[in-house]
Amino acid sequence: MTPLLQVRDLGKSYGRHIGCADVSLDLWPGEVMGIVGESGSGKSTLLACMAGHVVPDRGQVIFDTRADGPRDTVSMSEPARRMLGRTDWAFVHQHARDGLRMGVSAGGNVGERLMAVGARHYGDIRATATDWLGRVEIDAGRIDDRPATFSGGMQQRLQIARNLVTGPRLVFMDEPTGGLDVSVQARLLDLLRGLVRRMGLSAVIVTHDLAVVRLLADRLMVMKDGRVVETGLTDQVLDDPQHGYTQLLVSSVLQV
Amino acid sequence: MIRIEGVAKTFTLHNQGGAVIEVMRGAALRVAAGECVGLVGASGAGKSTLMRMIWGNYLAAAGRIMVGDVDVAQAAPRGIIALRRETLGYVSQFLRVVPRVPTVDVVAEPLLALGHDEEAARAQARAMLARLNIPQTLWALSPTTFSGGEQQRVNIARGFVHPFPALLLDEPTASLDAANREVVLGLIAAAKARGAAIVGIFHDEDARARVCDRLVDVTAFAPQAA
Image (tube, rainbow over all chains, first blue to last red; front, side, top):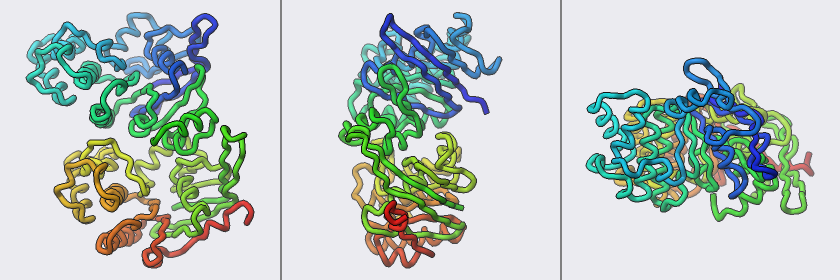
């Protein structure tokens, strides 16, 4: 088996400031990797570089494409990378409004992604959109409402539906439960776990919440000052942290 | 099924002057299929530490920890993930679940992770919950609000719903009443009969005597004793 994603020596600097440096990782099909660290540790920069939103200064992001096998997405043409972003990749933003079109109906937000990959039959698109709203527990009666009328948790679920409707193989998530009520977070976590399992998705989740990664991630990567300080099985990193920074991070939490 | 040789464990406390604490040296253990081995020793002697090294959430500093043909001390994370999915079950003292997930789904999860049909997995989960006397009215609720004994039985149900070839049991009868204790001892006996290799920690001496074929005193693995 080939890793779905291979990151090699990825680095990005902003002037003299290091965004992230020397990051390498393998992500296997069906695996969920958590990336934790404090604000400014470089985890979001790393995610943006992996997802092609930011061009890294160095390194490779090799994705196992359906058609041509492993290809470096950093050196790939812009249209080819954009196509991957519409078909095989998804990106869930921390703030749902960054990932949704607020002026378009809920059904339109989901349908738009289908049309971007070639769906043309209105009835089919609407049926698929309705199905996905159900899967993320949004009442079908809200299909023609705009997301601006939704609660924060509903907006986040709609963003997830919009992202997963095209059947991606890899999902990047930036603090997907950040800013939500604890009870809404729990529901979203359960939803994400179910979707990951049923669709065989791989995911990279950036968060500062150790309780979220404990429940969601198979593997964990800890970042500090733009560099990876520790990686391993999630419960091993949390229960028996080897690096001083991880020990500090774990012991600073009330309960994980 | 489980073979442990020369296992050592140290903790390095980077935020307390880099103190290195050696807690175990030269640990050895063999558990055959169909056998239950009880770990004994005073509190703090390292029973849980050894069990966690077998589960893989504690890193061994040295030695081999073979579960089937996987060396947990050396395996890559994805090797351990596969081992836990298919081969190695663990009934811990703590229930860690996503809040608001129904109990029946919590118990069915090991089967769903193996790709079993969702309805069949739920049916098996319901049968296991019934066997452990969890009232049916609770099955659709999250176990996070359950009593200690009920949470423990949910943990046990999850650990026994799939016939894992190797099982780690951390105080599986600790907070159970007599009737449920009998059910759990019956589950352990049945697991042994189908060939599971079991490592257990039991403070309940009578339970220990009934299910364990051998006892291993982990005090012998303390660094000063080695």
